[in-house]
Image (cartoon, rainbow over all chains, first blue to last red; front, top):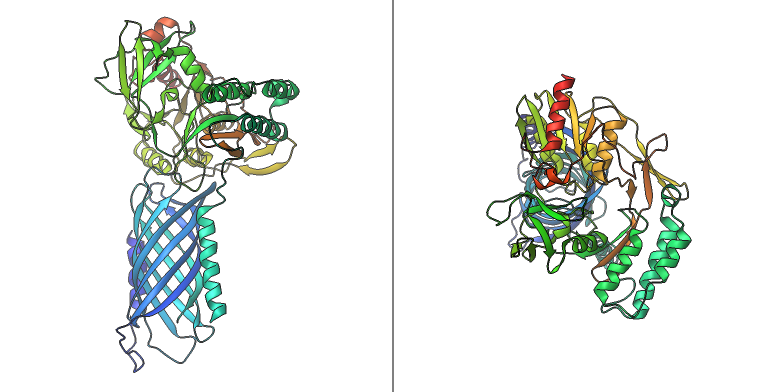
Length: 177
Length: 419
């Protein structure tokens, strides 16, 4: 747990927002950006304690953006835990997203941070839902005018009888309409 | 923009497909069972057994005889329920607990808070009470269950057990093999009527859910973990916690009596806490010799290095039988109790014949690198048997009470002698 907090602290320290630019206007009507991500994670069981499982995930969601620092994500998560066999899971996550760097004409310099709450239902378990928190610092690469390729580090911690830490990465596409 | 929209729609479609899986409707039709539907059921089972069943040679079964018996079932004379039981009995001729017909439940199953045991004389007794105030005593003789002769009822339920398929995206849950305890399982909230030899009846609710692993310390600093099922993967975390708590015990008793199996992932995970080094993987081989894959445990976390004893009985089946086999194969401990129920196959071919009736056939045999399987059960190093008197007096009961549980007492005696 101490290591997790240290990692989170380091990320927040590295992610000091840059001064806002003129392009960071607040919009009452949010900009909507659907996105899809997929990724891999290493699963550290708290009870063992050991990294004894891995996960694949597929996320489909949408981002509502009022300002580069103020936007919210809602996503559906589907995936599988690999533990000898495959144990599918599905769930939802909701959180905040902040672009850590101001809007820019440059395609390479959007860094962001996503954080929020998630709920997972895992096939083959007695408990039907597990709640957790997640922190995903990432980098968005603008491929075309509306299309961003995003890659992020994935840190999540779920509670309950399957309390565990998941560390991995996700990559995907966000379409900024 | 049209291309982008199409892309989003495709992504949504892909996720929806992944979520729903490939759920198919009943293969043969609907209830009530017409002669055509019954014929389809018979032909489907016959074809799947001929293609996949891997134990014909090992068990000395002539599949042509099986096929004839199956196809000689009357298709238009029996009531639906009776036909299903007869069909299940025909499948039971294969003497393979994994190749079976079962009642498929989407709702949660439960059982009354007691276990029954059939003595050698064919009489059925109460062998264990899991709750107080049921109005029964250990050793009470049960003559009828739901109005049917008790032995006959248990035989029919063994032939056609109930299985709970949790959730909507897979076939998982708890195995309900053969045992008299799980033979009383049914949808939670329903009840079962037991007719006692004393002449009165008792109605019991099915409230008892299949319990989580229970760990405690016995006198002499012996750790004890009772595992009712391996049917839930979150139980691996509970077992890890139990092992952590009992890490300083001088010996560990793992009680697999009545454990009908579940996920090998959980048993491998548990065994991974008992070994410090990698061990050989077991092979999964089809009837035609095709090698599918290997499975095996790997060391996990802090290793428990004390003596290990596994308690077994005839209901120690499938994944729990596999754990017992692992223990013996790697000389990591000993088995104490009755011969295990066996079950060394992975039933990966299955389908819904008609609504609520599932058929599955053993597809891959799990065997050691030397080609040995434990399909026909394992004989414990410390074998325990019971007289009718011991059954009536509750000594055959998995009570986990020292001095009142013969198998547990034998395990403790074995550990003392070993010391």
